[in-house]
Length: 327
Image (tube, rainbow, N blue to C red; front, side, top):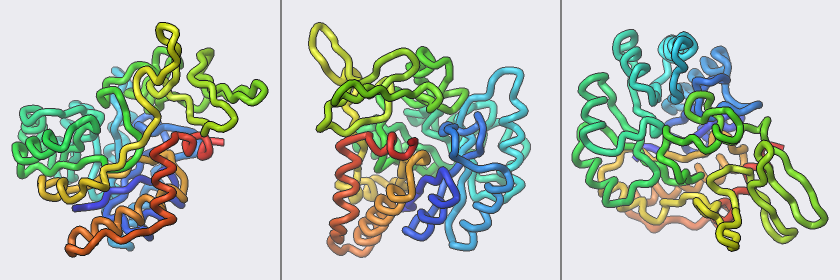
């Protein structure tokens, strides 16, 4: 199975390549990219450099143009597609049906992957994209069970399936999230920023740290708690007098215990979430997964890397890494 890893910066990209990534995905520094945050992503010139670096390392470079174009302003997205083709990326990852059509018409030789943002969640949807636009791989929604992954992978062959195995979970159906837009006016689907950093504030009240998004309090952390980034769906609210994580606990996905089952299911690629994460995250997670995949392929027992394991366990318990990366 191919190990597909994130890069939000050139440093993260080099780290992923050195840690054992088979493929690295990244995006442009604009609204065409679903991780459109300050200080991240690549200009066209930097993306061209990144593609060359990946190829020199034997890694497949993939560019995500995975937001939805705004009516009347499609040129930004079309230009992004044209740039991906020009710089020679291995594949482009798109969500919008119109962009899929544009790729198929203008750049038929460019390998086309369907983003999880497209939310293609049944064989008929995948078949439509494959037959109409030549999509060769689909990234499956993170909410799928192992049984659902197995069934859809068998049903859509020879289209490849790619599944997330580590990183942030999303309670919403990808590509359909509106929560952040209600509070910030910035759409994750069209602007590429869920809980944009410009709307984030932290307020210290005695020993309590309050995280806010715009004018809304998302969470309150006691002194002994790890503080998380204020994402609405992972906020803590008082409901009927009870304080709770209403939508989802702020835990991360870790599918490493079922890598063998994913291989048996015919999954082609394993994806790590985290283009907004730092070098330490990329190094630890990619390195650990590389060991696990290689051990699985050789039939050996999965090796133990205590440092990487401890790091990954910490990530699963808290979203605090988001805040540390953004300060």
